[in-house]
Length: 297
Ligand code: GDP
Image 1 (cartoon, rainbow, N blue to C red):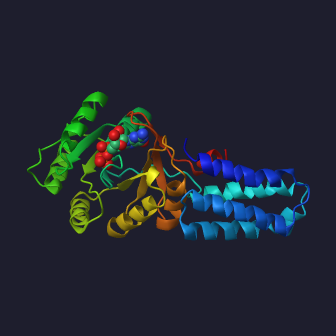
Image 2 (tube, rainbow, N blue to C red; image 1 turned 60 degrees about the horizontal axis):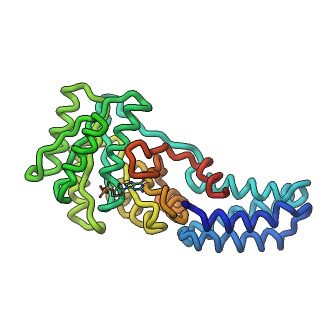
Image 3 (tube, rainbow, N blue to C red; image 1 turned 90 degrees about the horizontal axis):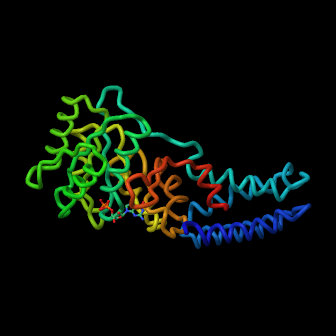
């Protein structure tokens, strides 16, 4: 189960607090030592942990907390608020262009779940926002990626634009958008190529697609199971492409929490959706407060 270890350790640290009628600075220090270890063990970025502990500690030893009637409860509330803040505070939704179609680029490393998530997002937009999306198959390098997207399109009854693997991704994206305009569709979701690791050729190609298609959203799809490495990947993509948001996949697995808690602080970019299963309806908007509650258990 996701966050299992983290939740258990945080709860242990907090339970001691909850019982206390009076809390001293030493108590706070002791609790924060446990919180710090819990976060590090969950693979949260070191600097993120350091800043988090500093912020919570500063708030927790304030006079209005220590002298209040239920200091333990207050401190738990502070931890919850700061966890929420760490993940961006407010929920951030998908942006639309002033003039249809809104162009969304899906980028990410191979295996992160990009193609599946493109399908999930198409389904989400149609079901929840009554939009008409077009999926564009611009990953011409991974064998079977085009076919995978076509299969997903069939399952969802969402149109897929493809031109095989002999035309450049930039040209495929351009023509796909033309088609969407001609058919008065609302969204195009461009499934771009991933690589096993970040390389210059990949980034150049993505930059080219970005320049030609002028996307409203560039979503980086990352695998939550990769922990804080997901935040490093997000940083690299962000430097090159100025991404607009992150979609965190595989939250149905036993991820420890490092990705969810590091990405926003490390990159400054919000997590906008999460994926929690292989099925095409397993996509939800990301709510930082709900995630904080889930982590705290
Ligand atoms: P891509 O290479 O980034 O396009 O990745 P794919 O979309 O092909 O996904 C790689 C694998 O991850 C596939 O087996 C997907 O079914 C699976 N996958 C994608 N998202 C999720 C998710 O949220 N949860 C789980 N359990 N599996 C996922």
